[in-house]
Every structure is written in structure tokens, then in C-alpha cells.
Length: 325
Image (tube, rainbow, N blue to C red; front, side):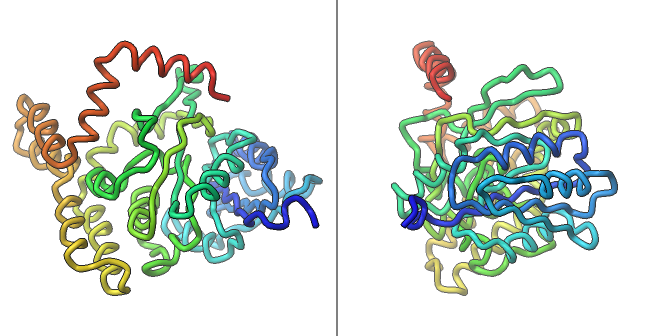
């Protein structure tokens, strides 16, 4: 019997589209993973540059211990369709998400699986990251400041529109892609829908380690600037509420709980920021935002205040940053 016989099969899903400048480093990060057994799927969304050809070359030359599978969509499916197609062919019990312009640390999959094995209720796991490129010099990006609270509450997931952490640092149990229904191809993004699904099916956990190097480009900077307004779009909100309704129909969620979650989703600060800015209430928005946050999710506000104003917590974060691998 081998050492990996009783360990779950994991799929490392690398999503790529027109990233010929960066895809080689992303694939090398996938190949460097120390966890076994591991299935690596290199998936291209019908790129118009040499992204797919580079992945072909690297897959053909690979001689490591992992199973490498190469696929390409016949036409551009965008994020929703690409996620749906890849999830339908993945064989792993856990799917680790990776972007074609980011680099995963060699121990990333191992760290995720260790948490899944320690916490049977975990249906999603995310981590911190390192930002580099476009002026960033390997800066630590902490997505969750309270290291002592590694389980993220369902209320917090709903209140922040599913947007806890970065989608490029997440992994999910395969069930998240198929319940309450197969991931719809018309959805705009996966990194809000899947965490919400995971929080309803089980729990979402956070690893306070930098396991991904996230490349910052001009396009990603613009997405970060517009992120709050994008999350406030009514079609994004309706996707989240639709998911909650589907969980009720499939019997995963009680109607009473669904009503509470839907109310939280529709009252999150991103949604209200859109309404307030539309009415030109710029000067009073800071007060409204934090007052609403304090009312809806006081623990999150307290965490933010402690981290921002307490010099000891900032110093401790710097020490952790130096010690973490």
C-alpha cells in the first residue's frame, strides 16, 4: 500500500484565457505541488494568443508524479461556462482553483487538504496571498484580519455578497459545483456564488498563510477599483438570491433561514453604496457604510477596528508575515 492510497484525489484546476505572457509560470506552480494524488487540468477558454500552445508544450514535456490533463473550449464560454465545463470533467473530491496569471506555492494543495481532513464540515477554504507586478513588490495581501477566527460565518458570507477573500485562493469540495444545481454558464463570476454555496452546504475556512502569488496587471487593478460597484449590480444580487431559493427547493435550507440570508444579501454595503452614490450622498457615505456594517455584522467591524488602530496587532501581523512560509 502506498502512502497516498487513503488520501483524497484532488483536482488542481488552472483556468486560462489570453495569458501567454504569464501562463508558463502558472503551469510551473501547478507542476510543483507536493501533494499526491493530484490531477492537474490545464483548461483554456479558446484563447486567441499562444496560451493553449504553451500549455500543450509543457504538458507534453512533463514527467512528474501528477496526472496532467489538457483541454480547450471550442469557443469562448466566459467565466460561468468555463467553470461549469471544467467541473463536469474534474475527477477530484476537492477542486483547487487557479488563475492563468497567478503562481501557486508548492505546498498550497497540501495546506488545503490538511484543513479539509481536520474539519469535515469544510466545503471551501481560502488563504492569504502575495501581490506582485505593476508596482507591487511581493506585498502580503491579507483577506481576513482575524487569525483567531478561521471559520467564516454564513452571515458574513451573505453580508459581503459572497466576496470574502479572493477567488484565486479558494478550493471547494466538488459538491459545491453541482448543488443545488450545476453551475450555470450565464453567471458572471464564480468567486461569490461558490463561497455562498459552501457556507450553506457546510462551512468556509481561512488559512492565514500566503499560498498564492497574485499578479497585479492593469486590468486587475481596474477590476479592484470597480469591485464594490460591480457587486452592487442588481443582476449580481439576483444571482445570489436565486442560489438561496434553489437551496430551499432542493431541501438544503429552511425557508425561514433563506429569508434571513436573502435580506442580508440585499442589504449588504456594496448594494447600499450604489444607491447612496447614485443620489450624490458622497459626504455622508462613510458614516452610513460603517453604521450599516455595525448593525448587520458587528464582529466583522470590531475585527477591522482592532486590526487598524491597534499597533500591537499590526506588529504581530508583520512578525507572522516574516515567519510564514
